[in-house]
Amino acid sequence: MTYHPTTTPLAAAKDTHTYTPTPISKLFSTLLGALAVAIEAERDIEHVDVFDMAFSDWLKEAEAAWDQVTNIQYMLNKAPVSRTEDVPLKLLALLINMTMAAETPAELRVAQSLLQRNEPWLQCMDNTATAFRASSMLRQGRLLLSQIASLEQFQPLESDGEFPNATCAA
Image (cartoon, rainbow, N blue to C red; front, side, top):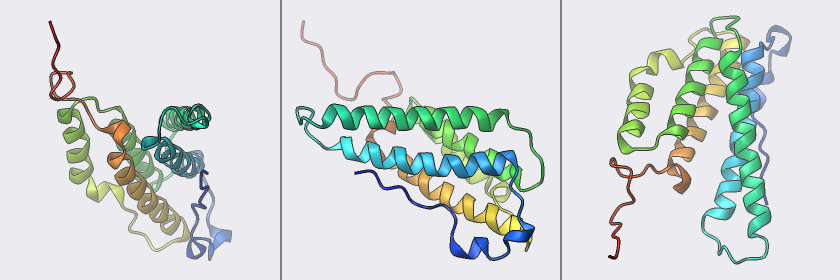
């Protein structure tokens, strides 16, 4: 059921002989694919009956996909910056991680405000194949980030750590 999209638009490959990937760009590209798989897997289980016979398999697939995303984010965080275009990729990966880790509305607002305040840092302004490829990955990453924010799994709890409208019977 999971859709595996490609992450390289045709136009990004037009001048491939001048584009050389770095460890960060390779990892970020891998992160985009892993995020797309994880989001689709999460959507598969988000609104299904937990008593469906296939639910446990879908749940395992989603958990494995999110584990893969976490592993790639860890490696991306440790990777050294090799060129200017790596900086916005690494920054967006950090903001994606912060959004996924937000446990309260306040933490989610912080991640969203950092995204808005760092807008100039999330762009590649050069007119080279490398900048074009990095810009393409940044656009895809922002799209996936907005999809992550809409998933039920990443909706933070109320600020006091309790579920909204939760009551306990005495």
